[in-house]
Length: 140
Ligand SMILES: [Zn+2]
Image (tube, rainbow, N blue to C red; front, side, top):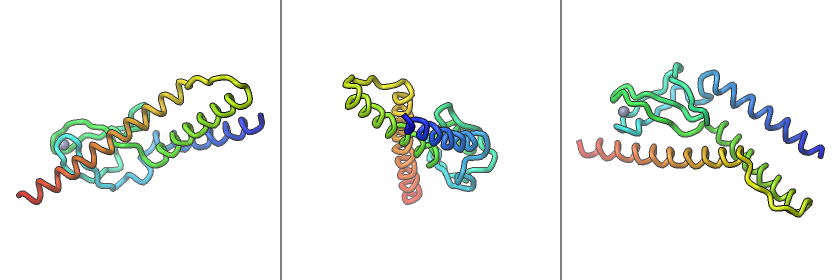
């Protein structure tokens, strides 16, 4: 049972850093060039950014088209979510092999999977927007 305590401490520490990133400016995102998913406009992220959604996605506003859009997770968030998933799987295996029961997916595990799926979709959107912009540049 000691490993549960160790894992809880690790989650706590990582959660704290994720929360710090939530409160302050995004770690490693300041000054980074982002692309608007609505109009493919590229702009540099200022230190004052609009905020984050509940799952930790950046909420950005495009200076060109003034539309709000979400941006994929920062690395700290993504690694935190993956860690939660890995531990959920570990927990499930523990239940299956030691308690001989079929575990059910915890709500937290489910939310994390949804968050990572959304992250994946956003990344695809960003790549598409970047691609679109490159095409616009070459055509004009
Ligand atoms: Zn835009």
